[in-house]
Length: 411
Image (cartoon, rainbow, N blue to C red; front, side, top):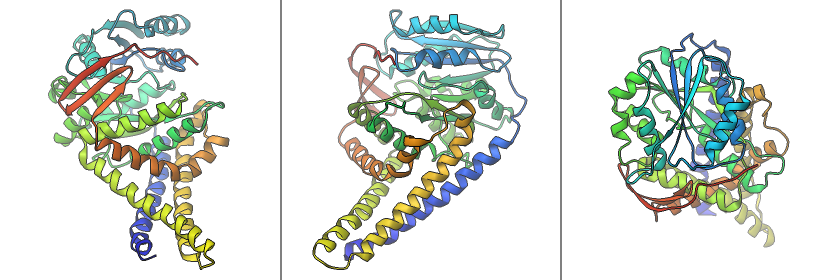
């Protein structure tokens, strides 16, 4: 009991701080979504690194051809000319009635040797960008962009003091998505809510980021990518060193329609924490400690309440602590859902039904999952990403351990 009392104060403080962040998150979404974006739409190059076929790929790529933007090019980049993704790219070209302002081309980058394949692909593609391009935009193939995505993402760069603008993903499990898919969506939601009004504390997500070409060149991002595995962490670190703000654009929260198995869930979540430990060790430590406090306090209170009840002793205090933490956390999740639905409802992806219930309850499980991920990251820096196994020696040193086939998941 004395240990539980010692954990109660930090656990409640952590929970209340999170709840306060939930109110701020909702308020930020409401303010930003009510504003008209700046009328700033210079010619943009949109870089789309591809490897293999994933669920919803054709729909995701087709959406990129239908952006409400005056002039932009789509640059699809692969490491191998035989990549099956290129067939989907061609199909998306054919079934998308895009206007004269959109052009597209394919870059074959070849195999990476001393960095992440995605980073290698982006470096090759950026080097070939046309001189007329003023803005670089990076998007992942699991993102389904709305028609206003590109215009909204580029708009904050009207302020030349801005370093970059970013969106983020929100996993939308299918009706047949199982527990693993919903757990991944809830796990990812906690990271989505880390972005907000404080542009100095935001980070770039490589699946939806825009940066002025002049800023990209001034910060020597191509040099920052040399030897790196994570494209977005490298860009974030460069912007932070230059004290340049990163604007989070709620309108660019994009749906990712994808399901996963239990193996894929653990592989994805642990990979993110291994990358975090390599590029942002302080953040990794915060994740480890905060989730250790949560699991010890919340699950410890439940276990103590159950044990005391079985012995016929009073269990009101530990049960009250667990119930308080749950109610605070569920309220935070509800606030986050209200904010996110302001965006997703525009494309018919509103979170409701089973997905809503999962968001309100499964955060208790993802706390334990975060702890597992953070602990696993302390023992290994080896990950498998898109069929390729890497070992991260440092933020600027990556070793390609083994190459496999490009993944192929149709659905």
